[in-house]
Length: 284
Ligand code: PAF
Image (cartoon, rainbow, N blue to C red; front, side):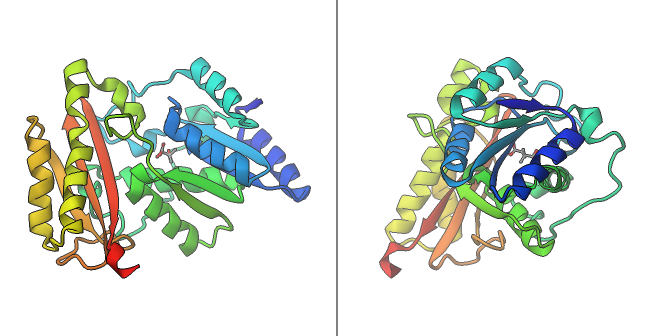
């Protein structure tokens, strides 16, 4: 496994791989690798010839007061996990290497940034799009892999790739969960034991919403109430509960054949998000 810290070196390497006609599968990460990342790496290994991951805690996607400073950075452990998972190249630039100057360019994927987490994390998705676009230009992947847990992020990146004609396929793979349903996330490490016990309430709420839809309920207000009941039952206050269109991410006034059920909540000092996609199987 090669560990590359300089943009110039990564560009030379990706250029030589591409020139030899071989494909690059790319998993961008902020490190603190977990089973979710490993599932993306595994798929990249199956589908592409060279697997590159990036490890970079991107300051531009954290708002003031968020957890940039304390975001976990277990570098040696990550190296072991990446090596064990069969990663070929780890690109891990320093903050100075990536953003010597704060970028004056911004990529605003309008509308898609405005719902769900958008209002609660101003500037977050612009921070994500600029770093991902920059990483795409450095790593030059054929395929890039993202998790469904960050559904809004994945849809925004897909749209950016299409709007800016990046020659990259975006794969969005299922959320990996703990046994009790909690979506695996690097931020779960912030949870104290009592908070960890409460945390699966997000998934329980989403499942309750999905069951109500399966039984025929179609009023988003009722579904939201069902989800909220499960979450509030353990004393957690949701930041939002939304039922949105799978492509536009706009709130659905009425649920028809499919929808994303999405929630966010702060539990202790961890801001957690989760979602499920519901499809009406009766139409299949
Ligand atoms: O999902 C993440 O870990 C980050 O948002 C990403 C895509 C690596 C960009 O910093």
